[in-house]
Length: 111
Image 1 (cartoon, rainbow, N blue to C red):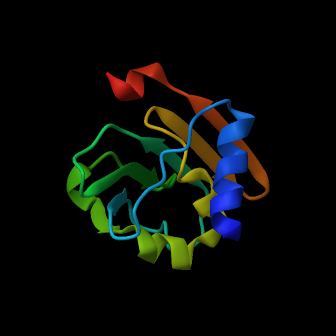
Image 2: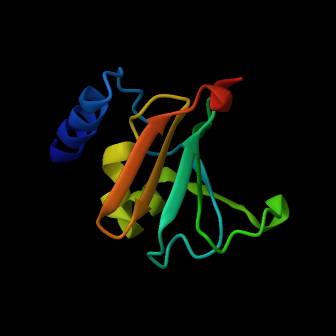
C-alpha cells in the first residue's frame, strides 16, 4: 500500500494521472542498472506486456543490443528507490543521481 501511495504522490507533484505498471510487465535496462548507479529513465508507449520504462546508466554506449528486458518486479526488488516513479505516465522521464532527482515530461517520448 505504501508503494502505491508514493507513486500517487509522485504523479500528483506533476499533475499527472498515474499509469501503474503491472508486476509482471517488462522493463528495458542497460548494464549496471542493478548495481545502483545513477539512472536515466524514460517511459515510451509500448505493447501491453511492456511497462514502457527504459532505464540506462551513464555507462550505456547507445548499443541497443546490449540492453536487457527484465520483469518489473526484478527492478522493484533490486532498486526499490525507483519504484515511486514507475506510475508516471508515458512521456515522462526521470534522472536519479544519488539524492538528486529530476523529473519532467518529454513530448518527444510519446511521438
